[in-house]
Image (tube, rainbow, N blue to C red; front, side):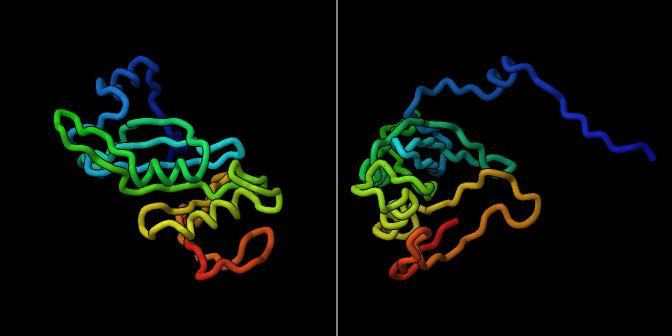
Length: 174
């Protein structure tokens, strides 16, 4: 037997761009899309986001970026997720965001903190508790890949991470 060696074909950047580029302008949802999903990354200076359209195909879904940008506060995130509408290609109909995931932050105070006692994580947890269930989910980022175990799991937490104060009713994060 010969030693296994995986060979991954390389493609030139131009070929990849030509294969995956869309002619649709930003903020237009492709006609075949069934949902819009958004990922939001928490930073001390704001909330960076990327919005994708989910388009069904033989293997599941293809994601097409619709928009990316920066939101200044959790109030801006809330308004965008619940109220933004995007025109569907070749139609007068619009589509709103179906699901959102927000990084639950880090140890430093967030952009909305009134004092330095609250970490960004505390701030995002409190904000998530006020949101209707089933649309926006808190996610815990990972700074490294885990070799084994599930890549996504839902955990219910019942205390704020840095103060050990209880979270009324708990909070589910992924």
